[in-house]
Image (cartoon, rainbow, N blue to C red; front, side, top):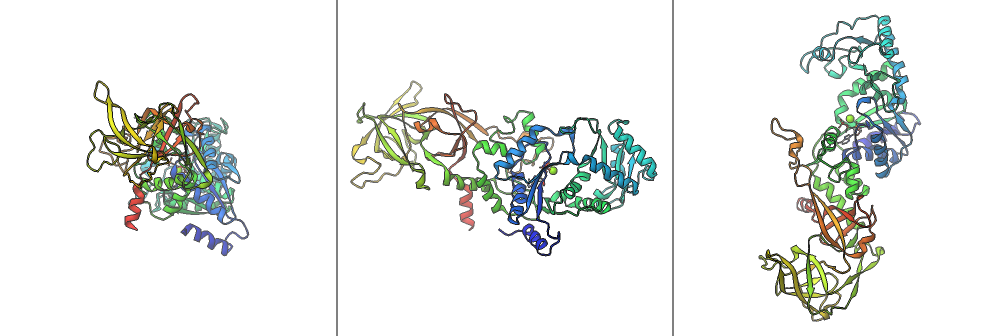
Length: 554
Ligand code: ATP
Ligand code: MG
């Protein structure tokens, strides 16, 4: 896959822009939430491109905001990056650079490039101007260097309350780029930080920390999403004023997915309002959520390669993400038979005491996966959906008088039903053709349908969790006036089936191993599962609407 990012790096290596220095990148999350699929794209870019050029990647926590940051997020982020298949060169924290950033702030004050401002946040906003109007200078802009040094030292010493003063860069209140209109460098925040504790009561703004952190780590290529393009001139200004290592920022498009919310703030709201069951709820687009759901890093990587990188933001169909997951799961998932909504099937002419077993392939895509044997007896479970007493047109599955194949076993013909008092079919009775053992009849007779089954006396029970899209609209942010994004949640995104019956081999299913329940979908063992109470998640159903779209447009 070609990309302008790769071309740019290749060019810089060729022209020795950074001399002999190896390519250095970083992935810079703020530890204020769990990583999501959009971050996975950034991770594949940051780590992937560095790997390609024999370079290195740091994991750097941009932890400049003590109010929202927690160790839990730091730990989850490290786990997620590893799960995606990457290991960082150095583990860094912007908070480790607080002393250096403070020294640089003093350097800028001494150079007459920064000043302490007593305006309130609201007044600063009013002075900032708009896209069409220039800003106004603060009355405190002309303070002397001595006064600024004194006030900034006292800010650090904790003499002033939150919000009473800030340190600002003295750049240009009339700049067409609003980020250059004397941006705030430091604010007062009497709050404990997850790493530095109460050492500081002034904290650098993200924009005063990010570019210099890159510089300290001698990052050659600082890749980030497009919304930072307008901040690049400011990062450059700080680097130029301080005369430090000139990291180069290059922007790429953010991943947006239909029916999906990729904003940490909104995802946090889903969690705190208990609209989902935590950050790793399998409906969440977090790495923790999709991992629990059964998605694979390989499938994500293939997806990220397919969407490519561009310089304009757009939205990607969620079906495309699912397509690459199915593609990967199809290759690696062990097949098994499981009946989600069971009804009993009794083979009247099969000997009551007889038990057989059938050898079936674990994965037709991979002969190395071997065979397993599935027990068979006179009473089986089949899906309620696979039988109709009165079949609609083109219904080729089981109905009275119709013959179908039981997967890998025999041909059977439905004969009669037993109903409960409410009129529901509780047993289907049928006869089998003993000559069709293995699933084919010697006279070459054809059947139009093959259904899956589980022997009742060998079956294991399980709870099955089925997931659907979390949001109803393709663009979840498209809401009526006065409504919140979370009003657009799909009320049916989770369905729990408690009476599923599985073939006995699944009693030993391991967490982290993908299964394809034949004809039903891809499944994995959930972390809530115990030997006494199996719980499976449906990762995805089998049908692949993206493959169809891709085919018709090919
Ligand atoms: P927020 O949603 O809170 O604004 P964020 O998602 O940008 O935050 P960061 O922790 O700042 O979170 O992100 C770390 C890196 O991941 C940044 O370099 C950012 O550009 C990148 N990133 C974040 N979201 C996406 C996305 N949807 N697609 C691609 N890259 C992303
Ligand atoms: Mg961000």
